[in-house]
Length: 526
Image (cartoon, rainbow, N blue to C red; front, side, top):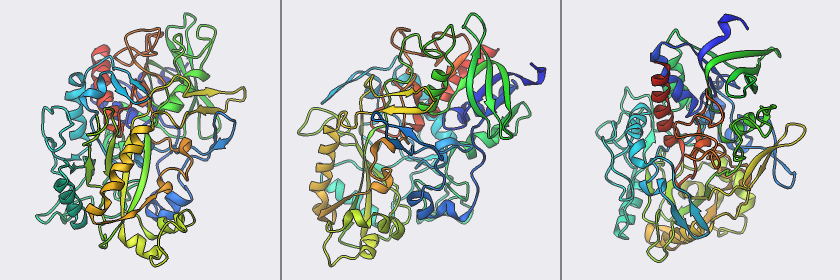
C-alpha cells in the first residue's frame, strides 16, 4: 500500500456526526482523510422548488430498499457533502435529562444510556454555539440545565405565530422558541438585517439553503475543516467494506469505489464510520470475515437491530385568519413530553414546520378531496395553512432491523405501530385546542408530503440506533467512547450509537457526541 494512502484518521461520511468530527480533529495537525459517497449538492433554483424537492424528490438517492415483506421503497436519504443535514430542518434540540434514564412508555420501556445528561451537557453547549443555534434556555420547562445561554437570540415569531404562542399561554401551556441553526442577524423588528446571511424566507425546513445560511454540516464543519492542510476529502467515494488484520482486532483497509469506477484501499490508524444509522450498519454487516462472521463489531448480534426513526405526524391546520408567515418554524411545545395531565406516559412534542405553499397543497389535493368544505378552495387553504410536526418516541425493538440479502440489497424491517398511543393522544390534544387557537376545529389534515407520501417506512430522516453503545459487550456493539468492543481502532459516530431516541430531532445529540468523541480521539492520538 502506498505511503500516501495511510492516514492518522479516516472518517467515512460527512453528516452531523462525520462532518462535525472532521471539524473537531482538523486543528490537531493529524493526517485526516474524509470519504464522502456523494459530491457537493448542485446550487440551482430547484434547491428552493417545492415540486422538485418534495413532489419529485429530485435530490433523494436513486436507490430502493426493501421492507419486511420484500416490497421496494425509496428511502429518504441524500448522498451529498453534509449528508442529510443538507435537507434537515435545523431544529437542534437537546434530549431531556429523563431521556438518558430508563423511561416507561405505554407500550414498553425506553432504555437508559451508559452516559448521563451531565456528561453530554458541555458538548451540547459547544454544539449549539458551533451550529449557530438561535434560542433561549429557560423557556421550556422540560429542558435540562444549560451551562451557557444560546450564543444567538431566538428567531422572532411573525405575527400569526406570535398570536398562536399567546393563545397557547392563555391555555396554561408553555410554548417556547424553537432552537434552530441559521446564520441570521435580526434587526430591532425581528426582520433579517441587511448583513444577515439568512433572509428569513419561506424555504426553511426540508429545502437545502441556496445562501448557505442554514447550519448544515457542510457549511459549518466540512468546508472549514478542509482549509487545514492536513485534511483531505475524496467525494464520490462509496466505501464497500472494511478489512481487518488476521487477528480481527484492527481495521487495516477501507475499500472504496471511486467515481471513475476504480477501487482503492486506504488505511488509517483510526477508522470512523459515520454513514447514517442504516448505512453504517450495512457497511459493518457487509464487512463480515472469518474473524467476524456475523459482520464487523457484531459479536453481540446487535448490529442492524433496534432501528428507530420516531413516530411522526405532519399536520396542517386551517387558520380562520390568513397566515402570511414566511419563516414559520419558530415555536415548539413540550408540555406533554414526559406525561399528560390525564395520562401517566410520555406523549412527545409539537413544533412548527416550514410554511406550506401552493405546490405542496396541490400535491396533496387528491388526499384531501372531501376533507375540506367545498367553499374553501385549495388556494385559500394554502393562504390559511398553519403547519405542525408532532414527534413521539418509538422504542428500540430488536426486530426493527437492517439486514442484507444474498444480492447485497438493504432490507429494513419495521413495526409501524410501535408505541404510537402517545402520538395519537398528542394529536387529540392539538385537535381539541384548534378552536381556542383561532383555527377551524375540523380541519387538521395529514401532511403526507413530509412523511414520504404516506409510506412511514420511507421516512428515514431521523434514523438511529443500529450500532448501539453500552458497557456490556454482550448487548452493545460500541463502548462509551463509541469504539467497537470487538476492534481496537474502529469507531461509529453518527446516530447509530443511540440506545433510545427520545422525542426530539436527533441531530444536536449526534453533533454533541461527535465533539465528545473527537476530544477522546485527540487525546488518544497524543
